[in-house]
Image (cartoon, rainbow, N blue to C red):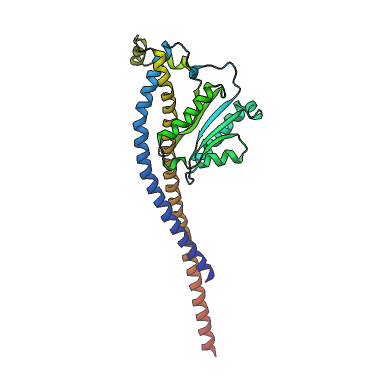
Length: 300
């Protein structure tokens, strides 16, 4: 009978867990819709800013410190975007493993020389890399509790200032790019130094190529406009990465909680079957004992 009680208690625990995971899935679905709206509304703006900057790069004089091309890469900065909360499957670990692989493959010397720094956004990213003895220059746990543009601009402004003062020679952003509810793309992109050849190069798209060929007259001049737009362009790159990562996190959590709910249902069915089998066995044993007792009394 104790075995039956244990199984019954476990069935109750599984049912409670199932209710929690189902509620978390619904919360993640609601947050995902809001995150998708912000992400989708930002994409066209970020794309147009990039187009304008790409046209200006070709006609600029190259005096802007943001456009400097270092002869030697001595110091590198990685801005890693994770999450504050768990229960989202392999969302964080898959990205972190991808980053560690890239660091060990391409930046082994920088790791040995302690010339590779990390700026971690999100509690999970901060704790993960600090525990593994990476050089975390600054961490932002709790960042996703209230996502605002100003803190993002401050992070990028600091990176731009340090790049301009030659404290860093390269700056990368690592994040999960949203593709669908069940799919995220682990992305590591270099934002500084700006690849002027790639930005000013012609595209296969004929409309874009025709726009690139137009000779614009800028007032006051292209260098002055570029000085204002380049920081804005870089801010938008990080802001878009933050929004993409937030949407991808909610999608991953929604999928993980849906899978957990289905697994709980399967486990509940198995436990109920085991409970019924044990109960039937107990009833059969009791009937056998009663029949044996009655038979013994009749023989006497």
